[in-house]
Image (cartoon, rainbow over all chains, first blue to last red; front, side, top):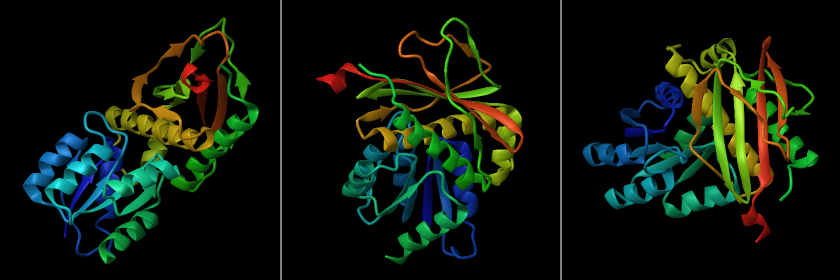
Length: 122
Length: 157
């Protein structure tokens, strides 16, 4: 399964890529990383990822606007929001736009593996 | 317009402590918070992340830390790169996580900006309300969080 990683922090992007190589996630293949929503939409059109990890607070196009754009490209895309904004309103808003899961920063490797496994299970 | 109250600051400080424990496995020792002296400049560490706040609150949240502390956190994150750029990136991301926690503590009416990042700064705190300085220690390194928030006019309307 093709995965796209979207986060304005290179440290976080690299960490997600690293965790995606976990033995419990053998089917995941990171096809691209993006620093903001605009870049993510370009990459999504090119690679049509099955799975996307999505930050919310980003410059240019933010996470919620990007999720809406991704849903127009492919409504079957499965999106895991990974954000520092852990309040209920933010989570509900992201889910109502098309996200399938929500992981709060800071996260452990184990939490991310579990979050991605849940996403792939559905 | 009112300043941050002790109970609100307490909820935020608890979340700062939670970050270190959850992200690295080691809790930070949070020292007593104090009000910044408005007559003198507040010296920051090597790298600082700043998140501006709007909505029902206005002001900024700062997290400032020395290079060594950030290098250790990068190591905990499994990073393979330790450039200045990586340290700058991380400090902004941590400030972003703290502001996310502040939103949880202070309510969803608190809107936060994308973090700004800078090296070696000194700020002269605004007059009233005076910002809180929260010193902390983690694995032998000192750092500070500065909480410069007050309710905005929007909250009063």
